[in-house]
Length: 249
Image (cartoon, rainbow, N blue to C red):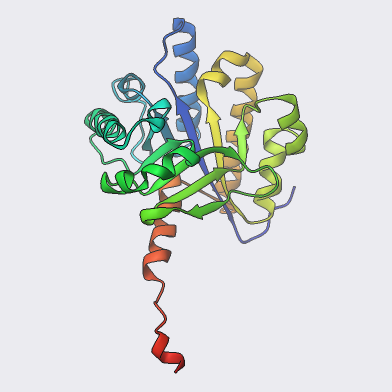
């Protein structure tokens, strides 16, 4: 497939959990991390526990251009005070591991938007949705308190045979079509599911990353992070001039 001169943009969000299973799963997850690093591709790593960060940091797996997001689960349904405490603890734990501020969370937008004020209070600017929009490229929508929501365009691996059917082919074919349309694409990668699936699943991911890296090396694609997309959206919202009601008069 020939790509246009004007480049598209792609951001990878990789979901990692603290591995509690066999050592083989840990090794496979590390292999997923090394695939990104081997091809020089930055990523946003979504972690719910410090164990996940330790896997990244203590083994030297985090690249300078990588970023971290806090994955929020059942705590979203808690009261405001409980949610604030849970969020503070999670941010403090992961920031202590990473040594950098966190501005992204991952989870269910329908639940998280109810806590938008608390998220903004703690420096969060974006919510990485758990939804995949199969009909178009990555979509974004404004949320209260200056937050933004990002939905995924491609999920790896596909969750079901129906998802594969709706996506119209494998992950690379889906991604290639969106790249050809010069769109901004956020790709969700479930590292543990990929690691536990099969050797072929890892091979397919490696093939996809190799193709992305090759296209990027020809300046036909920009590989960015989800945080960069959120930063641009935030800047566009704050820099938009306010129209005066007196001007028309």
